[in-house]
Image (cartoon, rainbow, N blue to C red):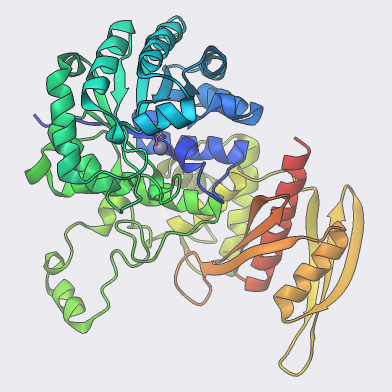
Length: 504
Ligand code: KIV
Ligand code: ZN
């Protein structure tokens, strides 16, 4: 029987540390629920000591997720470990993840500790964490630039102190597959107790080798891989979950390993993360890029039409890309709609269902065919909706190629109707200016993009706005069959997020 590899997802911790990828509480819970549907083994939900917001979101994730281990990162000190436990105490399966750097450069310049002090701190803190829970992961930060004998010694001692997983990260994305394989093989030889616990790897992608290094580590004996959806993470990111899983699924003949991942949830996980962060994956990104299953050249198209396997090594369906089928229409009832939601993995309360159903009916009136992707976009957005401090009531645009565009936007704030008019280069820009006047703030537009959820003339337009305030990025999204309305809604959504986050 194939050996099971544990998938440790750190999208909500290392991933969230990447520029422009921060998420609010609702978004983190929604993402954690999707990771549970994806069936990852461990969710690293954050770094509790980083902020009270982080601690609180790990707590909420711990309360909401029952089928995965939930972990919080902690530096090797008592305050961090106390906070990690505070954040995890409601989890069904809690894990404390303690780390300390072990490379000469980190020990000397960052920690200002001798190697002996690093060992004693690590042992003391693993024992301390063990007082709270049994499941303890220990990470040797910058392991790949650390001395092998030193690592073997520290690992042996922290295992004796109670560590149940040892992580050997390539923190700076420096190693190569052959080197990592030899390095891990030597450590395991020198520290046989590693064979009694889980060996984890955590590879950054600075040289584009994150996935290749993780796979090499499996061959050397690693039993857990740390990775993120879409490969987001510090600097060039972390090893991409979807790539690792699909390599293992597609090349079982080479690796012979299995994971618990439900690969059909890969595309939805990737889309949800993009929806939340506003950070798109490159079109040619392996597995989840828009072109990953597109066949452009005539020769390729001809081949695929005759036999898919000529150019397809895995099917789009295997990652959940079979979403272009008609699911419901305007005559579909509430019952059928709810069944579809359940199939997609959504459990809505009665109130949530009422809102979602009204939105679906509204869409079905405007759009002939409603696909899984449309429903997923509507409902996942609704679940991360923040309170609507400002609500769009109506807008009127006057635009053309011989006049300056004018937008009149009417919004409601706490029961009062506010209307403003503005001019601008094009109808969308004019609308943004009118909204700015209503909100009474000058907002910096960091980025704006438009795409469609599905194909076809009546496709839902998906607008993404990134507004910058006090060095923080707020991502707003708007959906409509009309692209101006989608853009206005996205802008208002970003403004509402600013209001929500600044008041909480
Ligand atoms: O990259 C790294 O070494 C980390 C550790 C804290 C696990 O993120
Ligand atoms: Zn990392």
